[in-house]
Amino acid sequence: MTLIATANSNRQTWSGLIEAYRPYLPVTETTPVITLLEGNTPLIPIPTIAQQVGRQVRVLVKYDGLNPTGSFKDRGMTMAISKAKEAGAQAVICASTGNTSAAAAAYARRARMRAFVLIPDGYVALGKLAQALMYGAEVLAIKGNFDQALTIVREMAESYPVTLVNSVNPYRLEGQKTAAFELVDVLGDAPDWLCIPVGNAGNITAYWMGFCQYHSVGLCERLPRLMGFQAAGAAPLITGQPVAHPETLATAIRIGNPANWQRAIAVQSASLGEFNAVTDAEILAAYKLLASEEGIFCEPASAASVAGMLKVKEQIPTGATVVCVLTGNGLKDPDTAIQHGQHSFKQGIEPEIAAVAKAMGF
Ligand code: F0G
Image 1 (cartoon, rainbow, N blue to C red):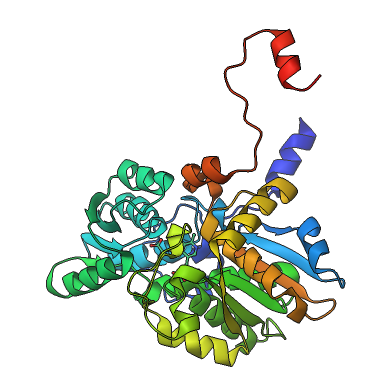
Image 2: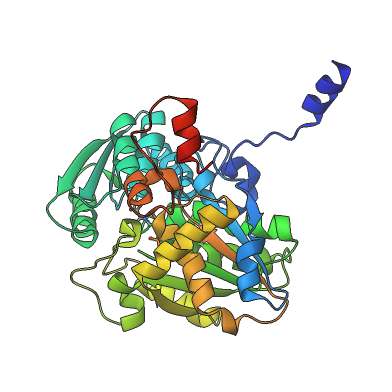
């Protein structure tokens, strides 16, 4: 009993990322903090995949799928919704490929605000849609893609009493930059490389902001190379042209005209980084590898970071530390998992030991 009491009293409590990083964020004592205790997500080594790289390269994943609504969007949303509440907003709006809508809905409802979400009809993974509906968002599925939805909500926020919470809202990136802080806090310095999936290019921008801020106050010595990966069918940053009809099974990053395009280019050049495309087949291979070899289930878009890292592995310096960002939880997209999962699934077995043993191959 005594031992348990001691262990509990020694346990560090996590109060969410605004409290953890308050001095680095644009909040004051009067800002109402709307939090679900997001952040503080694990940084997990993936040694089996690292062996494919070899040369003593250390590879870890920042598993942001373990945030309260299952994606990194919670980091941005705690800030965006807290600031919207502070400004007296009563409703928020976003366009989304799914995760932003889930996070916006959860945080807005917690702040007693209405949440309107525009999604591309038929292209949002099932778990994400379920979340937005359950959290009480007003879901509007449009007969168009994410880029069209974003154009509409940007204009609506100018003419109607709704606050835009897409990553063009500066508070979103302020919240998301805390992921870079967490990496440095755990590793003691920035990694050599950060591999990250890129859609609307908010997250890559936010990571760079975070590393630069820590660097400017002397909390890290290094600045990483930021390696951004887009799906080959939705790769405007690689082709240099907007993609009118983006296509990829990684629906989270099915984006043809990123809102943060210019910032992403600036990050690439400042960090000496690169953008590269990964095919859906490469994304699926990494998605399966993470689950079956490392026990980590992320959503397809997230696996683009690992697929990309493996694609350009020859460029990784010997002995480097590489972090791949896993932006969303695999449970978000059960359809893709069941359709492509590398599983052995035998159905219709009689409920008898002999039948089960036979099915097991004994
Ligand atoms: N990974 C996941 C799981 C995402 O949901 C997104 C973006 C990204 C990566 C790309 O991040 O846009 O900052 O470059 N999802 C947005 C949404 C577009 O609506 O949920 P980005």
